[in-house]
Amino acid sequence: MLNIGCHLSSAKGFTNMGKEALSINANTFQFFTRNPRGAKAKQIDQQDIAGLCNILKQHRFAPLTAHAPYTLNPCSADPSIRQFALETMKDDLERMELLPHNYYNFHPGSHVKQGVEKGINLIADMLNKVLKPEQTTTVLLETMSGKGSEVGRSFEELKAILDKVDLSDKLGICLDTCHVYDGGYDIVNHLDAVLNEFDAIIGLEKLKAIHLNDSKNPYKSHKDRHEVIGGGYIGIEALVRIITHPKLCHLPFYLETPNELEGYAKEIAVLREKYNAVLC
Ligand code: FE
Ligand code: FE
Ligand code: ZN
Image 1 (cartoon, rainbow, N blue to C red):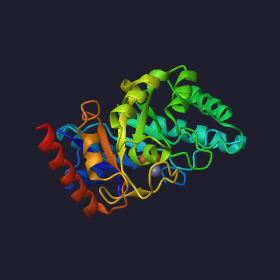
Image 2: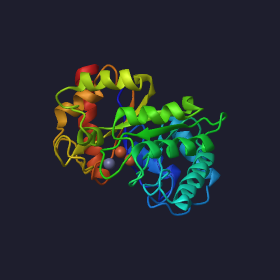
Image 3: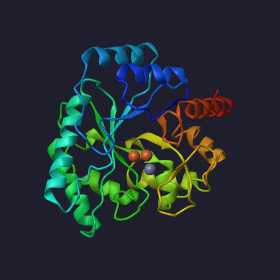
Image 4: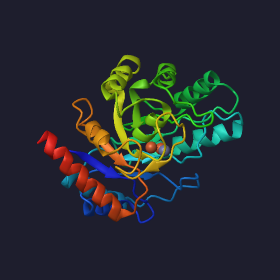
């Protein structure tokens, strides 16, 4: 069965996200741990969490992904911004233990003129401070499109971060189809070659989740603008080859396409149908 969901707003609480996911035939979803611009997180309501846990168990959901705020920059040149990233992630990971055994995804950061090597070192430093041997959450580094001075634009950069982290068994990768295509990995014409490259550099066992997005911009554009499924330069055929690929089809897929709930429901229906036509 295809494990698919979309990004949902956490404004109405955890139980409601579970209900919303069910209403669009999703069996997983992604949400922001707090305002995407990084405000203070809301107090957690235990009963609300318990309501969601019931839904997850009853409907056998695939792992959820919590997304860190975009503003986190663990490799900023400004120590106070780095400190904010560290404290936010530490707090988020403590809260994630209320929803154990799920994923926490973050953008590695932007090195802004310090150079990629310095950026990689700072990101690994933060991870070495926040990861705990007892945590059940796997922290995912997201593949980036390489706009500006983003770190994580290549498999080599992500691998360099993993290699510098002591508890690297707590880490994995989330591949964003829009980002890698914009970043210069041709998943439309050479999917197998890209996966072989990922496997040789990082190891496919580290790939835990996929952000399934089309792209408003062509290959290698380094832009990062998501498009609805089938409406962009990647196209529906290539996206179906991704969800049905024998090395990927078991992963959870999260849509981050420009849609309201109704649009997500349609994309999920289409993708489930295409998946079942190939793999059932
Ligand atoms: Fe992201
Ligand atoms: Fe993404
Ligand atoms: Zn993006």
